[in-house]
Image: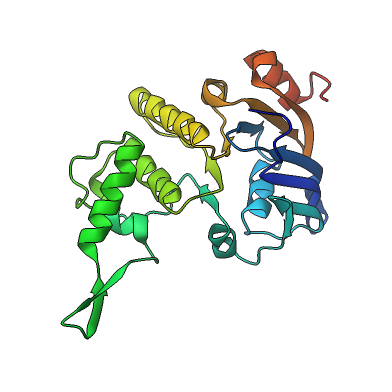
Length: 253
């Protein structure tokens, strides 16, 4: 990855207050194409608030969010998604009573005409396109017509990632992507993150599991009490260094 590559995302001096509480205080960061950034910090450090400002849930009180050099002012998460910012939260936001293909196309279902008059959902196309994107990601789900609730945690995570990839995400944000997953499924999520990197999709990962972060991250951003206290190459840090930065035992950048 070239350091001269223009950032996909830039956050400049961003601040968010809730009454008398400053949840995020003058934070700046950036992420480039094909880069994986681990965002870590203790509970209440401001990680989730920062991500929610990037993804359109909150509007910053101060500062700027720029996507490919253009300032954004997303009013809703839907606006952020339409611009290519996909956020996968812990609950995955999947409809458990629907199958994988419907979840991948949810809200954006392709239509076809029947009898030259009526428009119906093109389910064969949805199945073919879903299978294609899953194949690209080397994801194997035996029956895509099964309801999501019957799938494993790793398969659900894979469907959420496939949805973002199919709709050409320009930035992927993953909140605790391996929480409650067995070790083999955790490894599969790591593989998927690496695949996204190879495809040039930048990824921000929030995780309390530092093993997750070190397994895939190029850089690690550490937050404490609403401030960014470190932004360093992952290779230059050990787990103990990150923990020390999180609790304030080590001076940050």
